[in-house]
Length: 240
Image: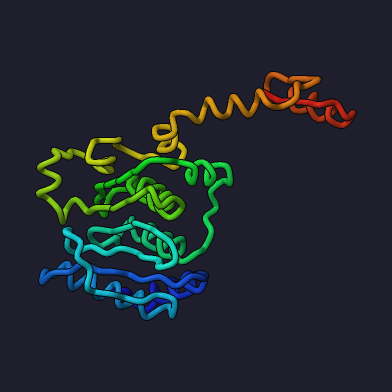
């Protein structure tokens, strides 16, 4: 499935995997399942920390899940994540395998603090340039919080779902069976829609801090210079 050059590059990435995990595939007799199996066999052969299980029972076929046995992660691809989505697959393999993301620590903390159950479905196409942002954001959130579940669905392979839900464009997001959003979205935008109390919590944190001696309004050259000189004098300084 993967050419030798791509295998070499992927093998180098997979050396960053530190935690063993399993790829659980749900397949049928279709040609796409054969392609998926070939892809997963290629991946399985590139790292001794990855094992392949073809006895999956997901209703969507072909599909596969990335499973850690020491912690709960529900992250799935329904369809072949090639084209623009190949990067999403590589990142998912790394993150499920324990490689840390570069997301800001405060965002990671906010994701981990989310309560409730969130079951996301993202419909994508392999030619969609905006889809990877959404898929990668929700995959990472599923890795960080066991209450977040995500399946990325290739609409071309599951046309009955696309027609039933009258999906006209991708990416199209569903949360707990209901429409959630369309178009490019990153972690920040998704969190803003989910965590409606974040603003109030930030305000409370700010209220708990001691008052500033000097508050500089504006972050341009003049504001930055004023803040720097005030801070150098040991004055408690804030910049808005």
